[in-house]
Length: 429
Image 1 (cartoon, rainbow, N blue to C red):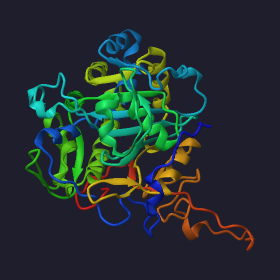
Image 2 (image 1 turned 45 degrees about the vertical axis):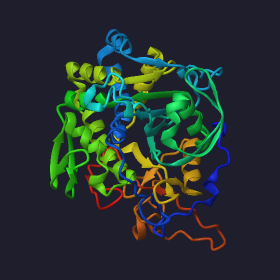
Image 3 (image 1 turned 120 degrees about the horizontal axis):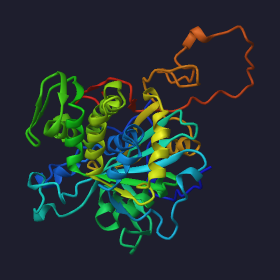
């Protein structure tokens, strides 16, 4: 069992889930809206391919072999391991499931003038995308939790990437931590809020999304309602699209085209990332050595990994683990949140703690509306019967004194095999 790191926070003030039993973002009432940001700051939401970037690297590991892997690792920038003087144990010595924190950074270094490199107003570095990947010990399921950039969190005393001790801070935006605290403090903040040990972390930059979408020849997405965003220059009518290059980037960036909320933008990201993972794991990609190598290059050239992650045995072990997980068992969910001040959000309690506890217990996170089977998954009606409903009734006697079964929670999001549509009128399409 993972040692708990969770500390006190303002989470005690948060409201509960909606009456439908689904853990909706901002259940207190309405979607948090965000004011218009300077154009250079808005570019900070470009690095949305963190999970896919890591998946690409890991899939490539198994497919292109050790010699190619050595070349790919040579592309990587390396950061100190999380935890300062307490380096993580080797991957093959980890008992149970494993956790990796994936961050999308707005750092423009090496990204070109089109993304604001050299612009004094773009000098800040924000962790606008924060995804925690958990893969179960038996390799049967994986969960990806998105922590919205404007979530108010408590940053513990931590060690930044230069080894400097940073003082604790209370109720600060999640995306403010990377600039001064580096990946080290981002990791320690997520450890504190989740109670999970996170020995590995990776960060991806802008161009990774463009290069990966180009490498697979485009990512198929469905748009349910019109997206019109003058801010990023994206205009899509309802329909199906194959997006690559800058169009893919704009789709991941768009916030004003989906109601102005970062929470709604996360739904767009889940649609895109699920589709890209399906493409990466498809037979057409896995049997194309050139495409795989191109994907691996696109990812590693735009990634920074902690030293513990950028080791061949670790990448080989993770690649093998992720290769065993069926797409239907990869769940994308968002941290349950409530309104904080109309522009920012905070973890919704006790739902957020229930989610972290499930991961600590190595249990899957079930998304609302996901297909169910005979493994105890919760049905769409939230009854915990896998959607069997009345058809599951039997003649077995019922003990009237037996305690009522507690339905397993469901979370807003989607499974990687679900081909859902981007829908600006709802939080999750």
